[in-house]
Each structure stands twice: as structure tokens, then as C-alpha cells.
Length: 312
Image 1 (spheres, rainbow, N blue to C red):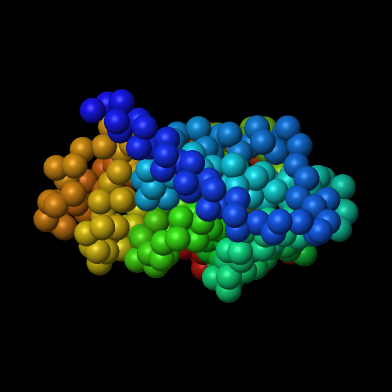
Image 2: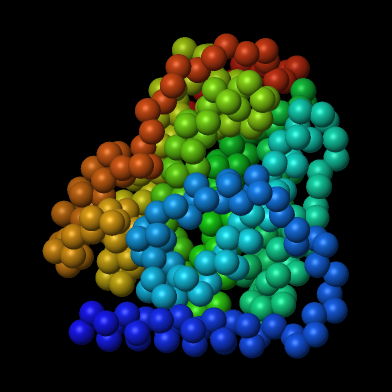
């Protein structure tokens, strides 16, 4: 039986791969220069793609299906990271924003026939994040409370692109219910990633959420204020969980607890799911310890006294 399953999975992989390749034009005349990436971009992507069981749950696909679409998703993410690294270099040198990353993403998606209006919207969000991320680190770039919230949401646009593209490649409808459910969780993931790279980002002068909070608040309060923000996104996720459909709940549980997912929670009462979700979110890889913020030179020339109270 095990051999039979393995054979079936291999055939499933081959068939899906044939379908993906068959979508490409027989003679690609498009200039593919904009799609080039480097080894460094691939290394950054490997941090995201290293947990395959969790990705199978996030993308709602089998290992064979993931194997077929993984090269495309990896290249898409690498191109967005190419843009991210270039933006960070621009922040250090005050150079203009680079937009070739988007041309590369749109080129690959167009070749596979999966560039639709929703994916363009997610690309718009990512481009807007790059723009606002760079502006917020300028002397006149102090963000409003609404802009801080938007920065946190926009930053995970690359993951929304991956989710939508994966569904298109697999020929499945996008679950907007699940997209809403994981929105708060994606923000928590971005914050955790920033906490892990905080000291390096300070040394390199790159954007970082904790660096931003250390600018918005007194350094002694930055960690507690960021933790308060994380708690809001935990509650947002829990509230969404209580409204979500059962298929989205099952997918959420598999993603958060993979590879040690337990199916007996999938059909538990929602009040128990909400309690468990709070505990899981605070104890998982999404909840890094907040390091002691470092006192830095102020980013902005203006210091309105009422901003810090309005942010709360």
C-alpha cells in the first residue's frame, strides 16, 4: 500500500507539473531580464519555505502538489526580496525606489496566466509598503496612527500574493474566509521576524517594527507598546476564528501546530477554539521575546506631543 501511495503521489506531481509547463507559451519572446535573482535572494526565501508541513496547511495542498508549484512560489518570493533588499540599500544611501522587482513578478505570473485583479491588488499593497517604509525613515516621515496600522498590514502582502497564486496554479478558488482569518497572524509573523533581526537591522540602518516603536515612544516604553499591539492582533485573529467556516478553522489549526497537528480540536466548540488559539499564538513561533530596545538618534525633526497618546 505504501508503494502504491508513493506511485500515485509521483504521478500526481508529474501531471500537475505537465499542466503548469503547458501553460507557458511554446516560444517565450518576453525579455526575462527583470526576473533574475541571486543566491542571496534564494537564501532569504529559504527561511520562509523551510517548514513544509506548515506550508502544506497554509496553501491547502498535498506534498506532491507543493512540489510542483514550489519552484514558482520560491522565485516569486525571491523577486520580492530582491526589491526589499534594494529598498533597504536605498534607505541607507537615500537613493530612488527600485521597481524592477514588480516587473519580474508580473512577468512570471503573466507567463503562467495567473495575474488577476486580486493579485495585482496585493502587488499594489507591497509596492505601497516599500514606499511608506522608506518615507517613514526620513526627517519628515513621521507616520500617523492610521499609517502605523497600515504599515503593519501592508508588510505581509508578499504572503497574500503567494496564497493567491498557489490557489490559481492549483486551479482552486481563493478562500477569502481563510485570507481574513490569517491576516492578523501574518502581522504577528512579520513582527516576530523583525524581533529576531532587530540588532542586525539597527546596525544596518534598516526598517524594523521595534525600531519604529522606539521612535514613536520613549525607549523604555517601546517594548510594552509593541506587546500591546501584538495582543490586539491576537484578539483580531481570535475574533475572526469565531466567525470562520470549519474548513478554514481546520486549515488554521494545521498551519499553526504543524507538524504536530492534532485533529481532535478541529470540531471543538468555538469558545474552546478561541481559548486555545490565544494560547497557541502566544506560545508559538509567532511570539518572539522582545529584546531591549536600543536608544538611537531620532528619525524625525518634528516631535508633536500628542502623537504618542493618540497611538494608544
